[in-house]
Length: 373
Image (tube, rainbow, N blue to C red; front, side, top):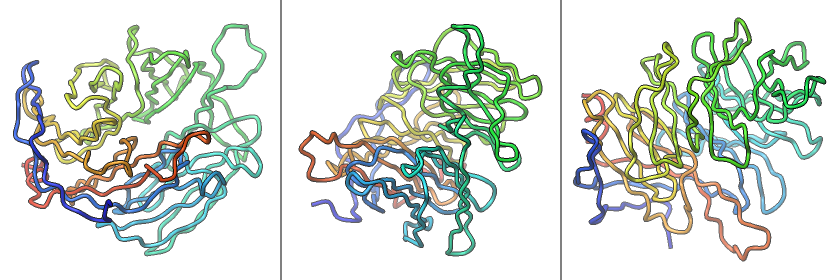
């Protein structure tokens, strides 16, 4: 049986350094403490989870097959503070201002997309719910207070020429959706930096190929950053230097660095643990969660060759934590929060849940020290 909190000493597993284009063996990190914070339903399909404002916010959307929407709030050290219901699924959660997050999803009651702003005051949460007008479908959010945008995977069919991409990004003004003039197919994960939105767009749902695109908000025009596709992009992270964006290429077992000021991909960094899915930052280290192998890799972005500082193994979590599909970081305390949300098939014999939210930390805090020296 898997206990709520336990210590795992990483065994004789092989880790690697990425240095000068070569792989070099390294000593595995020891004394990793893994705490199971909460179990997610066996049918939980969404990755909504974020560390923000010194707290971990965990979304739930299912109770067996029924739609039950709520947010759990945890302190940085993993203590449950409170729970608050939502009117819609928390498909994606985003930091939103100093003490709030934004949740976006769909409500089964009206089949409309909604977004909610959840504000923390001490140990209480206040939810303000907003319906997206029926002519738009909010898939994901990008922006900040006062500069809010949503992606619509189906776009706005305004009678334009057949074969022309639709307008698929919109803002909300006076309760109405206003689609931006830029036209693109399949906008997915996005980040707002300066006066541009950088978007991973997936023109063909049947393909794993994505194009990184820059949308200028002044002219409302979009331009591809590279004519070559990238593969399996699900995460984008603005580095603390404010000028570079990290994106994952899950299908290529690597991450890329995008120089936003030049709109150029400048580097690719191999991830030996494979299938990068979650991205975070701790000091000058990039933190990468590998989906299937359940490894957390810390990469030094400051040092030449970007060597691996540490690799935390969370594979001992067994069947109750199937794989990593969300990662966030408490950079001050050196903690990493992981989520596994992979729904069972209704035809599958699945008597237990393999979904949960974890807190992972290192007893010695050597990784935290190395990433801040």
